[in-house]
Length: 334
Image 1 (cartoon, helix red, strand yellow):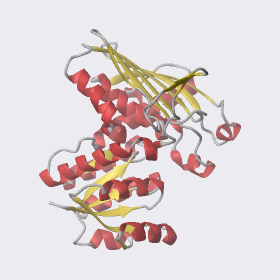
Image 2 (cartoon, rainbow, N blue to C red):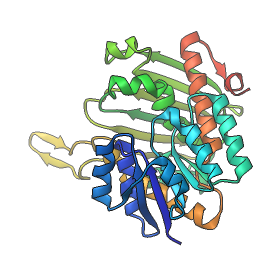
Image 3 (cartoon, rainbow, N blue to C red):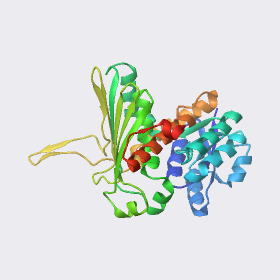
């Protein structure tokens, strides 16, 4: 069955999801809503869909599902609203910046029986999926350590930082989800260090731009995460798994997978610039997984509970950085 979508938000991430929807033969983008008319008009013109209000999308019988790409502080309210309206919901991370608010929202989802998927696109990257497949096949033995490097080419605008909830809840949250997925066990303890090294203005806004985190599970498995808001060489996305029988890793993606050798040395093309180009296939695979869940009425590949647990790790990391101590996840989850 073709799943007919309403898109809430026509900004940068909204455009990414619109492209993913169009790439899937089992999906149709019916309508878009955005508080900025020009943004909605530009997307509607490019994808040949209607412009409707959120109220109209909620009441539309020709829309099966919505993709929520609005500001973070609207996510939980919109999830509840469309769950009650009987629509399947795909929501960009995070569900909310408050653990309690997320828990309350997930209760509504459970009560209504709605389909909810939270967007953690990196699980759907072909290279990262191949790493996970090697783990699941037992090729590297028991996972012992996970190392994740995730560095942006530059910081987002100040207005975004003000609303993002901070680097742990906005940026590292993706890596927290990846760590849970790759470790195969829930982290119990978090130790984090955080600094302002790239732009003093970020510190003035109460945030950090350079962080390192160590997660530890009950059995002693560890995940090490390093984040920076500045990588002058491009969008740096790497993972490595050390297991009892060996290791498996995924390196960065480049504009072309070539290497040139001359008398002057060896050179390779630059890294892909940012997430919109680096994760094109991941976003397509992600929306395909959501469509399968809608059509089969099965579980979504990433759930509201995944969103909650990643947010709890983010809160624990922030608490650790602020208080200079190891923090148990139970301290923030209750």
